[in-house]
Image (tube, rainbow over all chains, first blue to last red; front, side, top):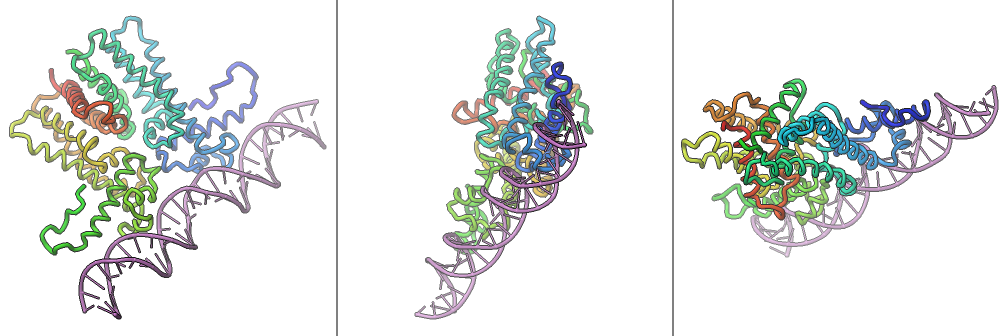
Length: 209
Length: 209
DNA sequence: TTTTGAATCTAATCTAGATTCATAAATGTC
DNA sequence: GACATTTATGAATCTAGATTAGATTCAAAA
């Protein structure tokens, strides 16, 4: 997925091969991480999946930790970007609760369908060594802030039930979403089904009747 | 926590010392696991916390994996037992949605306050090697079944909104609960506050208006 | 006392991976 | 088609931790 990206219209085919391999390794790392978790992710697994020998990884990344950190940062970034994009696409004047539901949908799409990177972040955020966590803090803070805004706006508009602890409510909702990779599987239920259910839960759980 | 247990009224003080140390090691393992995660849990951390040298662990457990497996099994068991106990304590005729809310409360109590073992399970379930996971499957299946029953009963009683995918709804709720150890901290909010919010979310999220 | 077995310790050993490095292929350049 | 540079490799090396081996301590039994 998305192996090319960068340098779109500049030099014809600069270090195309190189960039491609680098992306292949990064993508492989994301996938292994999302499947096996930080503990069990060996550099050799990543290399195998990328179709390259282990030392080749060092041609592109100085260490395992740097590679993993990049996966996490990219994952967190993509998650936020996708959600922001979807929100931005909403017509002006969309009611705040509908915006929240759109964010729920977008989050689940990235998490479950679009990006191993995003899954890697949520499935491993609790297990990372402190340095990686620190490196991630800023970006994940931005994502949390996005949701904080979403709820605060809805609250201000009177769309959220009274007496709810907003922080706790927000974290509970995000927890429900973040836990989905632990149980959801495309073979036993459609993605749109999960999205619909999550939206319904959130709308009725948070909203005024 | 529960250092003695077994052999209550037989021999005066049999292998009391031994059982105590074993429990100390097990408890230390639960705590380290719940704090640092499977990846970062070293036998030496466990030994340190238990006040013993690393090899002493091997006097009680044949391997790191067996030790960790036991922590997980105990954690999953305690989680279910506590929830079952709380449910059993409810007066007969308690409405199904109130029973669900009681389960929410019980789950959060064990998870956040009572047992490092329970926290260890939920924070690491996704990272475990296949053998441990297999060993855990039966017990965690029992817990899932408990919740399935809770929801099915409520549904049958007409206490749950129509058009909700029950499996997805159940897993989303459990996800919200299981994710709490990732963010909740006794210093920035009372446990009862989180419980109240979670109950409110679940009641309105699942229930008929 | 002496003996014994449980409980621990210190000092190795062993091993899976991460990391390094000197060199081989490939690719592009003139 | 020889030269330079970029990519990738095989064959070491290094290291953190798990595991094992062999004392050592000590209380209680004999």
